[in-house]
Length: 228
Image (cartoon, rainbow, N blue to C red; front, side, top):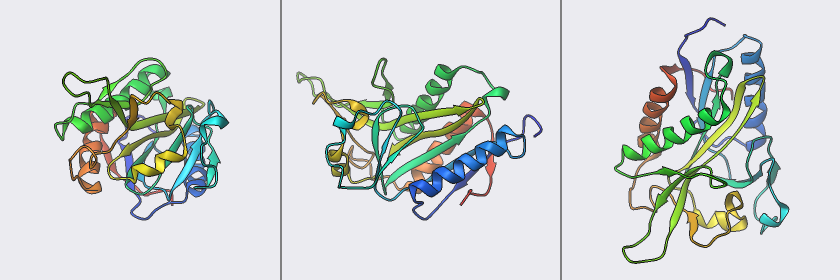
C-alpha cells in the first residue's frame, strides 16, 4: 500500500455487536499488515457489554450476570461499552509512523483532550495505572475528585494498532457499576460523560470534534467504508 495516503474514516450508525466488530477489526488489520488495505479509524457504538483486557482481575467483575462479558486482546483491565459511548477503533500502521508505543498512547490521549477542549472542558492524562483522560471535579476547599471520561486500550500486530479508545458522550453511567472500571477502586475517582458534566452534546457533534482531533494528531482523514 502506497505511503502517505489519507487515513480512511468510517462511522457505523447502528449498534455493532462486540464480537462482530472485533472480528471485522482483526480482518482489516491483517490486510493492513499485508499491505492490502489502508489505515482506518472506525467510529461505532456497542450494545451493553463488559470487556476484560489482558491485565483484568476477576475480582473487578462485580456483577458477571449483568451484561455479556468478553475477553479482549487489548491492554488494560475491565471496562464497559454501550450506547451513548463513542468507540474509536484505531487501525494505524506504526511501521509508517513512530514505533513508540508510549508516544502512540499519548497521542490517543491528546485526541480526547483536544476533543474536550472543543467544548471548553479541560481533560488531563495521568501517569501510572490511571491511563485514559480525566476531568478534575474537585470543589474549592473540598477533597480530591476526578472522573474518567475516556478509556484507552490498544494491541499491536506487527506494529499495526488494534482497539483504541472509548469516549463517554451520553452512556448510562450506572452500567459502570457492574465492574471496577479499569481496576481503579479509589472512591475519589469515578466516571463521567459530556452530558453528566452539563454539556448536552450530540454524538454527531462529538464526532466532528473528535475527527478534527484525530487529524491533528495523525494526519488527513477521508471517508471510507465501515468493515461491517
